[in-house]
Image (cartoon, rainbow, N blue to C red; front, side, top):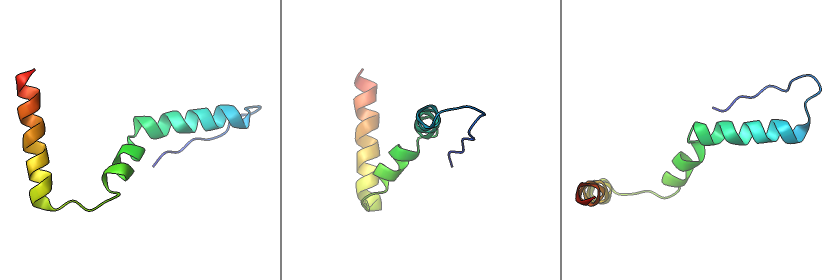
Length: 58
């Protein structure tokens, strides 16, 4: 979980910027997008195998 504390004299915009950066580093949004829809285990397996094949060609 992203956790940022406001410093003395820090503006809300700076706090929000630091929070967004922390969320991106923790990959929270990527995980939320991935879990948005249920993916059957067989479909997940096929997708991962396809990614492995694509990466091996590069």
